[in-house]
Image 1: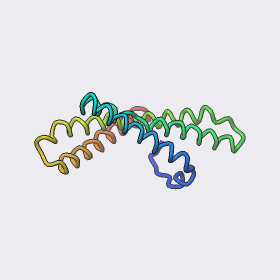
Image 2: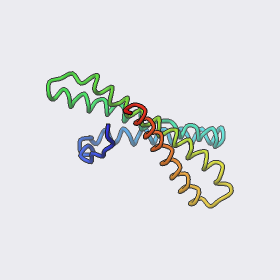
Image 3: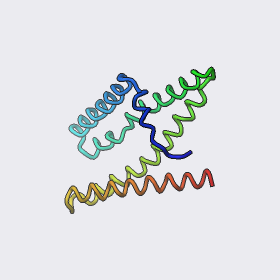
Length: 142
């Protein structure tokens, strides 16, 4: 599978799908803030990693793939589930990169300038995530 960007898919999403993603992300942020207020910032930070957008995205990816197959008279259930699963695999790789981002930020922010640490952490996230994607691609396809 080649990585590509399809900007036309932005037009295929309806306003209520965008609203669902926004609301899910907002609710998780509020819950994380409340947890941080009552139990401390480290505990609250755990909840910021909750995959609220992933839940909405996986269901929407499955729905869109299923509908695309149904338009041509086929049952798209298996295709929709596979597409959502592939998206989840990518999210898992990105989570490892996010953990690297968080670890670097946690350890270096008290000692260095915030912009420098955040830029370094973002670069680390990108390197870790893309390296894992490349390894997965080579392992599964090579």
